[in-house]
Length: 292
Image (cartoon, rainbow, N blue to C red):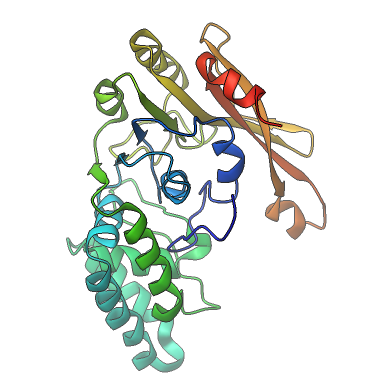
């Protein structure tokens, strides 16, 4: 994978860095890529960059996030202009620019879930980490050390993603079961469900995790329909495993991908490499085995 794959903003849990390794397991050409847990759709962008398909379905229960991605792809100039206006407002606050974040967050939580507000909160919040409280409100704090991605930095990436995907993508914010039911033979499904070790408590946006047994059972929908899939799931860091392996009854194989040094471990003065698991359906094994 040559060149630089565009991305809009930092997003915690994004598979942007791992995308080149994930794509090794994919066919060179297929009908459509479906992401039921898309986040910032880093894998879809990487697939579009390599022109492996001309059809994408991007889904995530976080509706404002999906709408922001759709607006970026279909109306890049409008998004950049609206974002620039909000981004520049923070400098009117002088040294109290952090307060501007809370003003936008309050607007967002009071119903102004616009693409530009969503983008600004992502660009300025700590570690690009989406966090919502039990009441459904965005409650992540701002990064006090910086002003967030500047419009001049953001614009070329938004334009690049729009050129890659405009007219090729459909969007939804459905329960992932509904999205799996939509899949047809010839499609490829990539799933990166929320970290399973946080909680098994459900809420309306998966922010508390997806129950393990329910998710494992849902994969059988794809197997019954003969649809190929890839799943990012458990992993390990510094010899410590996190998350539960998918059951052996599923017809897939597990590979460990090197995700690089753990930033959390580095903060503690340690050097630990993180490995993330990727499960692939049986029909995809010959593809990977043919890679030199």
